[in-house]
Image 1 (cartoon, rainbow, N blue to C red):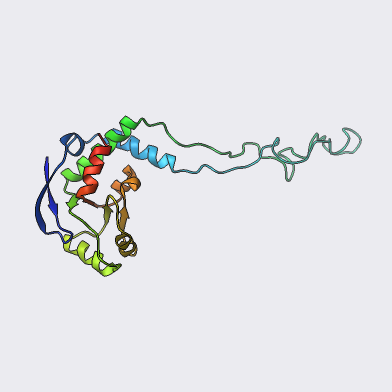
Image 2 (image 1 turned 120 degrees about the vertical axis):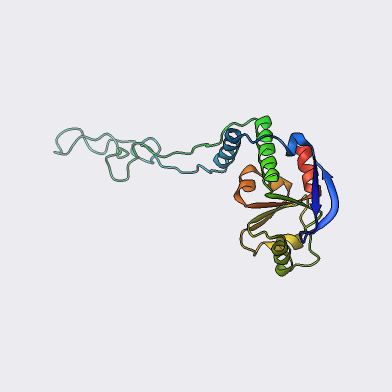
Length: 206
């Protein structure tokens, strides 16, 4: 398939980019996309909660007082959950929330997402989004000319000037291909992707 390549101000550059139908024109598999996004978000969970059960609490090796004759309820250790400072009965513990997802399924899910974005007109291919100097106003003017307010800018190697210029604009995010994931693609209303990034993404999702 051929896709029109626009300039950074939204004007037609007159260029066409050849993209593989197998990557950018596949059917939308909603169930697979849900699984891919869920697996990504689950993998981002830290799971570092920690509480101590009675075996993990320090001390309590000796019987606190004799079994009989004190008038108190018998006790074998100060680590008992019914004692103040004792262990918790059902403690929260470290957990690994990551879900197994094959590379083949991940790539298929990513292909499904980018195809749907391109099909619905939510993905725009541009020749470049680089700016000559660090100036937020310059990037804001480019996005305004293209009619984009909630946008993810994907570049193969975004310049520092572009990253710094865009970071103070609300709902605008700049990532390279290594930072691209299924969740971030669906988080924004529009995607602006450079032609170089689209070609590299096509190679990565084969």
